[in-house]
Each structure stands twice: as structure tokens, then as C-alpha cells.
Length: 116
Image (tube, rainbow, N blue to C red; front, side):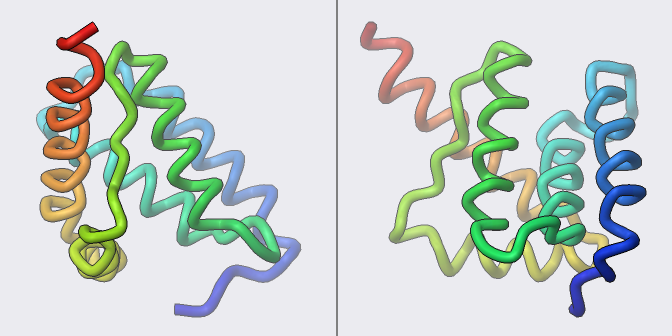
């Protein structure tokens, strides 16, 4: 997948922000899948020359925290699963990435939040 042209990026980011702002609204799609779609959408825009993956994961963490959830930390041993889920999301199947996000949030909830 080729990144968008430099002139397309502001419009695509503006559309992405609108979608992110609509996240709290009602939808028949589960929240984890909507988050997965937003995360994948950010990665698709590819707004930076370097660090898009790190920035996209940071934005995902910020959205989760603002919604009252812990971050969805994907550990190194899950990298292949994450990349596979991102490839499926590139084709419009956000379920695997949504599941990965939901499992990571749940895991971090049990590891970091409940013990505190």
C-alpha cells in the first residue's frame, strides 16, 4: 500500500479527526473494532516521514485512556499477530485487530489497574 501524497495528508487527517471525535457516539460495531478501524486509518494516512507506527500506537493509547480504559500495549512477542491483524484491517477486516486491542486492554487492566 502506497502512502498518500503530501497534499492529501491534511484532508485525510481532518477526516480521521472527525471519525475519532465520533467514537463516543452509538454504533452497532463494537468499540474495539471502531478503535481498530481508527488505528488502522491513522496508519494508512502515514502522516510522518518516520515514526508512524509509534505515533499511531500512542494515539490509540490516548484514545483508550480518554475513554477510561488502560492502554493496549502490544508486547514484542505479539508483534507478528499485530502485523497480521493490521494487514487484515488494510483489507477492511477490523475484527482481528479489534480482538487484539480488546485482549491487550483486558490484559493490562488485570496487570496494572486491578492490583493498584
